[in-house]
Structure formats: structure tokens, C-alpha cells
Length: 165
Image (cartoon, rainbow, N blue to C red; front, side, top):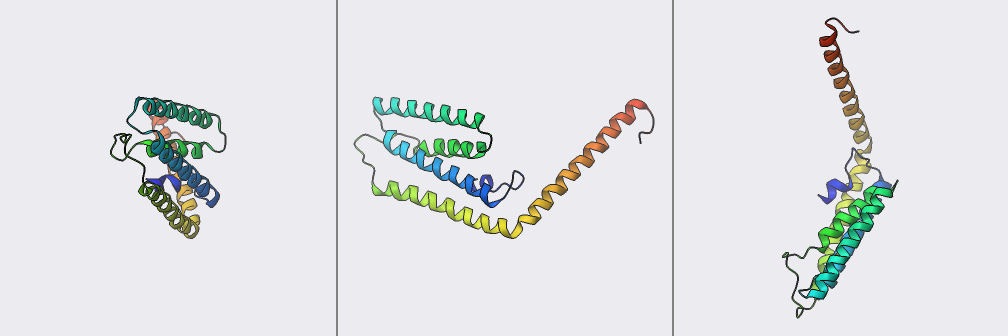
């Protein structure tokens, strides 16, 4: 899913755009994992703080998404991956007596390195196949216009009862 969102060819597959999307994925993953490690604890205080943080995080980034002219896709990715990172692995908050171990940090590191490696492969493929992606997008758009034109002709021909040029 990460790879398909980051390099979706019909919304643009250029190196700067892909790197901006990578920033959104990594920033969201880090924010979510840090919030989960700090706030996803089975106490009332932590649960309230978790809920407040989740609400504020979502409200702020949704506001930024709606008002961002250039970076809406980055904000959307940051929001989505941040919220997914906040969800504990088992879906249950950890007990207060259970401490966060170094494996928690290695999980975040592995997640980020997997994303970076995937994007590196995609950037290489994008570099190799960039012109074909543009040609394919242009061809599909032209096919869509041709199909729309023929559909409109059929509708108008049926209403007019004759030939339409």
C-alpha cells in the first residue's frame, strides 16, 4: 500500500513529488509510533491524553490538508500513517507495568527502513520508466476523451433523430 500511494503514476511520478510523499510517510509513521509508545497505556490519564492527542493531531492535519495548496498529499499521508502508527500492534493498550523495550525502537527503525528501501526501488523504476508512464497517462486520457465524444454523439443522435457531424 505504501509503495502504491507514494508512486501512483496518474497523480504524478517525479522524483521531487516522490520524495515529498516519502517525507509524509516517514513523518507520520514516526509521530504515530512515538505517540503510541508514550500514550497507549492502560490508565485513565493516558487514555484521556491519547484521545486528546489523537483528536488534535487529526484536527490540525485535516485543517492543513484543506488549506494546503501544494502539499495536500504530504499532509494526507502524514495523517494516515500517523494514525495507523498510533494503533497498538495487538489493538490493546499496554499495561502500565510493561516498559517499552529497545525492540520498540527497532520496530520503528525497521518500518522506516522498509519504506525507504521501497521508495528507493520505486525511484529507480520511475527513472527508468518515467517517459512510458507519461505516455500511458496521455494515451488513457485521449481514450477517455474519445469515449466521451462518442457517447455524447450517441445521445445527441438519439434525441435529434438524425446524423450529427
